Amino acid sequence: MDEAPVDASAPEGVRAVQGAPQATLIAPPVNDEGMARRYICWLGPAMAFAAALVGQIFCVAVTGRGLWMMLGAIGLAAILTPMLTLAADGVLGQLRQAGGVWVGLVLGCLIGRLMGQLAWGEFFEATLVLGAWITAMGGVAMLAGRGLGKLAAGESLAGALVTAMAIAWLGWPVWMSRELKGQEAAAIVSRMTSHHPLFAMNSAVRSSGAWQEAGIAYRHTALGQDVPTNPFPGSWPMIWSHVMLGAVAGAASYGCERRLLQSRP
Image 1 (cartoon, helix red, strand yellow):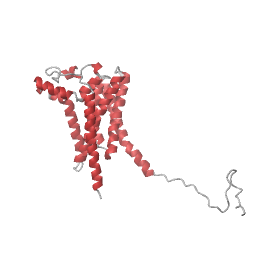
Image 2: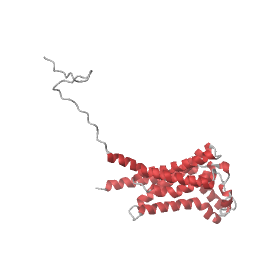
Image 3: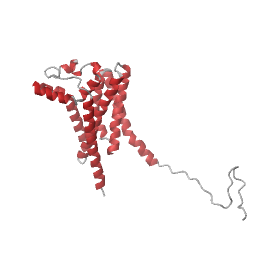
Image 4: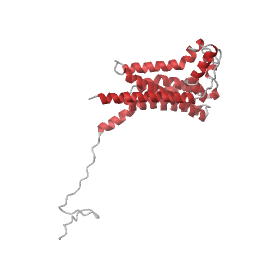
């Protein structure tokens, strides 16, 4: 059998047989829409990160670089997390939003830590407390958003409601402590403070002293005065309880979203 003629003009090491079909390499098309969606899905978390970082830097400038800097992060998280979490669509997008808030606050606190005297062990434990607090608020906000989403401005209403609940929970040592008296009140306070974000943060950053003994706080709370209180109940009970609350609420929100998607034709 005669050999097929070879194309002598082909580069050395590559000889194409004349008349044989040649393979053609075609570059895959660029999916501009997919790339745009990928950038957009991270735009919201970037904005949440920026808002939290700027707010925490301002907090560090106002409150200082110790315990009150970390307590300020707890307060900022209560304001930013519910509304920014519900600014995204879908469970994954909302988790990114909440994560952006946590990273921004932690970075702002890190800047204060590098300028102050806070020990690294205290700082890392404080970031866990902050993360548990954001997890709880994010999960509850997601669930509230699913429940009120059918109403006009339902998600905005859900975010405002969760923010109000978070501020009320943070502030009960001030607005409720004057009504607590006696041994029964001391037992109730002991259980509540062991799961309270401010006391958990104070337990993580205990080298700065008790927050309720500071000047402005001492004048507005009866805890540690009329009501015996352990200022350092530990941070882990609060961390576990708030993580579990956020996980259960987030799972319920995810289940509601799946049922809604399955019910659509």
